Length: 193
Length: 277
Image 1 (spheres, chains in turn yellow, green):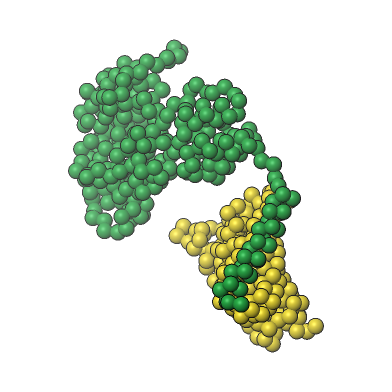
Image 2: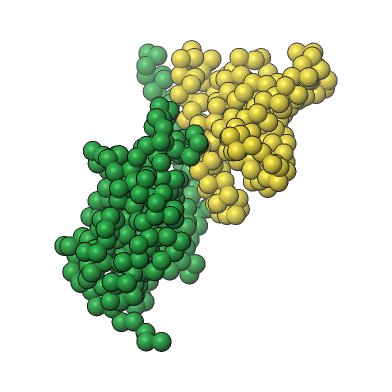
């Protein structure tokens, strides 16, 4: 049980995908202008991450390793991710059209979100069983959501801040992201890895 | 079994599996979309310039079907597209859609407008403007670094040999992106038929204008007095033309001492109905 907890906290905070591993920076900057869409994006990514993690874990163990096809890893994982993102897109378009419109181009771009391929490849490296994989994926997804939500909260407040003209827009967003990343480095060593 | 066969079969099976899942999902989660929106998107120019105020052409098409956008809302497509959209929507076409093109409100190229400093920075008008208001002596005129020409998504603006932008009126779609891009606000969208333009935007007094530029408006008022339609009005030492009244007669062009007023003679005279007050 404690192993699961360590895996979860490790993925959520210590090795936060956005702020420590620097994966998935594009949606982190692109969809963090509003709290609501940030939560939606975080949930979509968490969902895709978990599904992709589990599917790629199974494929890694029962297809790639079993038949000695390790060289197919990247292309197979991309296939899985692309299919899952398509599925999420169809789902959101029908069920939550508001969120679908708010996410816009960033929804299909989850396909190329390196955090998703990153988690699939990390899982392939690690010796996790299925439960541990699910916990790892959910932790990583929630960590992504956490970073996005914090960023969105700060950026919503920043709308009213007198920012120097040369720093407005992407400049101040990147500085904020850097400071957040420094803050998250304080979690290093929180759990035994 | 051979590795290549194995990999082909496994990839094929996984791909086929996901294809089936997605095919099923697309059936289950099918969303009914207005077929008119797709038809409208077909006939739109597809430049996704955003001049209509919507996010791209598909946004505009949905806006039209939802009743949020005018059928003549696409400035790029003009009358042709408006008529086609009217046909799709099954309503009468608007008759008063006139094509607009961008007109430059400055004639001071590098020969005529004098420099007060040498600028060696980034070749961009917005950058040059940050350095003490730009190298030109005239603080209203064209800086000549071609930010508008780069911004134009339709390649309708080119820089001539004297660093002044030239609008290709055939290619111009009136999208207004150059109006936004020019840091000195020197572009104006004008109905295509208008052929007389006062190419100066300097509100400076006549003496200052004379020092800075050979073709600037010095505020002499001769054009305003000459105009039979009373279409020219003086605003702070600058003659401003009212295109609602101008008939392309060219009377003002002859009297302008600085040749600030340009006449596109190929454009015919237009008759205007002006309400008598």
